Image 1 (cartoon, rainbow, N blue to C red):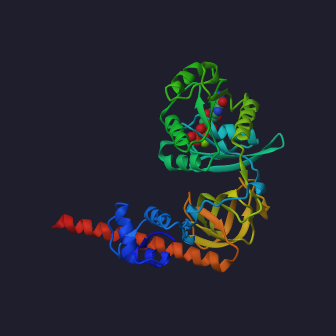
Image 2: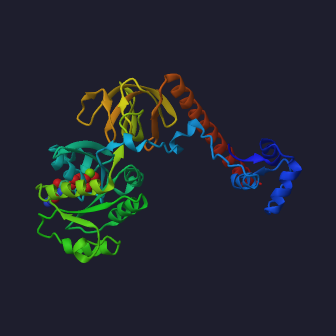
Image 3: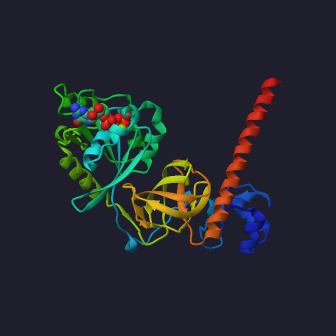
Length: 370
Ligand code: GTP
Ligand code: MG
């Protein structure tokens, strides 16, 4: 258990409170019988009596995103890397993924601008790779940050004719803050005005130094439009992924993160989630952020209905009571009652926090008026 009062500590040690107070004083801690002592003090006192303290912190189950669940290493299996493509607007991120996937998402985008996070999985040389496409427009900082947080590897796309731009810098900052390895793709190499040396110079200033200049950042010149250099880029992704030794336990209840969510008129709340550990199945009782439900239907990135999704798989799910927030964590529970109880408790807690925030604001306003 966590902190306790001096009285409680004495009781659990079967000692007189006065004796414990004395011991505490000798350790330089002044405390009365009703005062709380922290875990460090408890441990010190227990040691004085030759008792070993079990550090058992009771985790509030509603706080599941704080639980670092440990998997038996023997149960861990290799999982596909999650690769986030980031960079300045129009530098060719979506085109890169279109060419890799033989699709044409770019053409369908309003104004050719990506406004959400796209999640895809591809097969490359018998390996699966999950890609997240992020927007480069300056308005979408949170999406870039979120993309960097759930990823294993960041591909920073820099157009060779344009060079390092504000959102290139921002994307690099997010990746570095998330301690994610970076691969630089110098794009639009087919353009006559392409100047890859200039891009390298500019990135040097951001501590991304190419291997040929004595650094350890991988640079791959590509043309997303013409499909040039993409094999090398994919090889590099797999190489970095291999070094990261990415593993998960597919044989457990799923946990992961919401990539995006919305209310669909026909389907109700719909969430695109990334399974990060375990396997998500249709019918699973699930808590997602401050809402809950039972996975009613699952659709993969190709629009196909699937029954289960393992680690690193992006899927769209329906069956939630409410629309969660992008960035929310999810967790599957064994029984629906528990999922419901936890979901409701979290929703209630959120309401209370919102109320507290409003009353604080009101107090501030009041003081301003006086
Ligand atoms: P945002 O998502 O809005 O940040 O843009 P983006 O980075 O996804 O860029 P997108 O893929 O939409 O490409 C922007 C423009 O650059 C399009 O007109 C593409 O055809 C063009 N483009 C992308 N890659 C290349 C390339 O390798 N060579 C040339 N010449 N043009 C490219
Ligand atoms: Mg795009």
